[in-house]
Image (tube, rainbow, N blue to C red; front, side):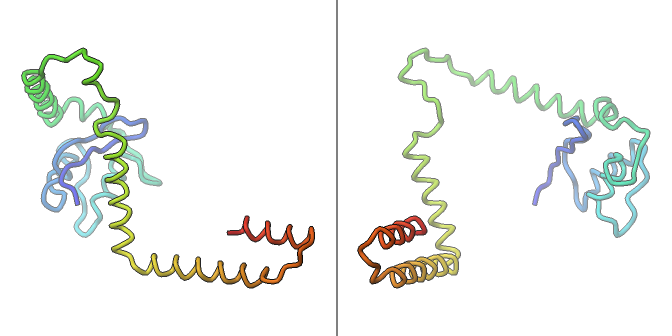
Length: 170
């Protein structure tokens, strides 16, 4: 679930960025206010938006929605907020230390990343025990099958090749 949308047209051009509103009301009002037909009751607003901008199969539009966005008050609000955040961020900037010891390529060290990634994987496996059981059964069955097939393999070139093949199959 999300409550804000960055709507991009072909080529990555912004068409809308902002709140969606309750039942997509804010978003649909933006498009209606700028020249589109209203979203019919019962229609999916996401599909309706694609039809409005001409991105849905068989739809077209005469409105340049990217230019409409650039001239809208919503765009100006976003730009004002970005300027405020930029000013707020530069006010809190500390002087950069040019000491090479303080510089790290990544925010977290390698072993911290490894620990967190491993923990996530283990949690995922723990939450799906059927996956673990099926993997364990599969490994046991494959091991037994290969082991029993080559149990009394002859001590010859052919027997050695068969055993090597079994190892590669594992």
